[in-house]
Length: 305
Length: 175
Image (cartoon, rainbow over all chains, first blue to last red; front, side, top):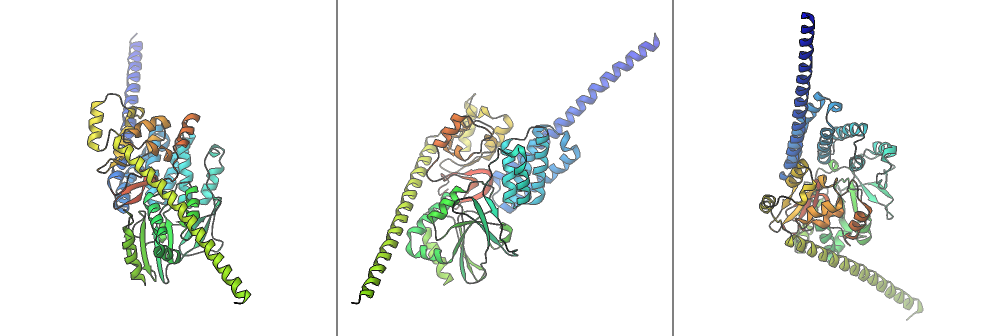
């Protein structure tokens, strides 16, 4: 009788302990969940608030590093799906600004976890593929695109690297039919050169190009010594590049291979006109408020001659 | 005048005329594109003008004064992120993050963006899924010249700067 009472009490305590442990775990899970979600929200706010890409990257990376420690401690596989999703978004944001390998790897790690749970969205898989292209991990891109689950993704043109191995900077030019991107070396070390950071999707760049096209002297100058480049991009839209190159035959637009190969370019905001003499930056004109900016271009061109 | 000289002159004239014609043709194409682009920008500016929300302050008033809004399509976390991403100038919206709008239907995203007059920017959003009807109608919104720059934000002076999953809207003119 006494034994059965002890057993009964023991059983009650076990059940109580089990529920207590469950609630503690849930509380811990919720706490981790709250931290991850809060970290992402802070990153989003910081992203909107900070302008300088360098400052932004430092601050975002600080939050992400803390997040990575937390995620590794808890174990990616033990997180809630919504938390893995938030972690993917965080890594994606960092990879966008750093164009760096560790963040791209974290993106892939969290995407694999989402895939394992059958929770990877098409948009996330597309972002992964486009990021591989953006950071020039072509082998990973090819392998990733070949996975049966990714057969629904939009695959851009074929990137054909320069046949010769190069040490310096290079650019990618879209083929007239949009089927391929072809790499070529480029140098700005000799003579006068105008590097125009621009984008076919940017209305300021479009306006600048149209105004230059109408100005005969500036148009001739651009045809002679300008190189129009756009930053590394994950936008898998190449039709606009093809259209631009048809319209502005004398200053087609190219995508740089790696932005880090262009330390002389102080800003990748579009449009930005950078005037070089024998590889040295002489002057710059940033932005295109209107055709009055042609005067500033003329003044900078005059300094080159 | 020798025949050969005359022939050379005629060839040169013909060449100059052809070149001139090509230049004129290119110029007219460019003028047409520029006119279309300007028309689109004016239309986008008018849409922002007639929208109910032009600033953060108006956004807060709108949220406080309306129990049910198109933003209800987003879960609270996504709504917070989307609202934190909005940027305005004196005239209204200049950019937003499309990240949390991707999981909505194009119709839902359109209704949200219409609060700010940026509804036509849905053509730049890579939606997770869309009904055939929604997809067809998004296609109908496609402009002649794309001027809303995805993955960029409106940045003074008159530039677009790379920015994660933001859209630098054509209304980012002289902010």
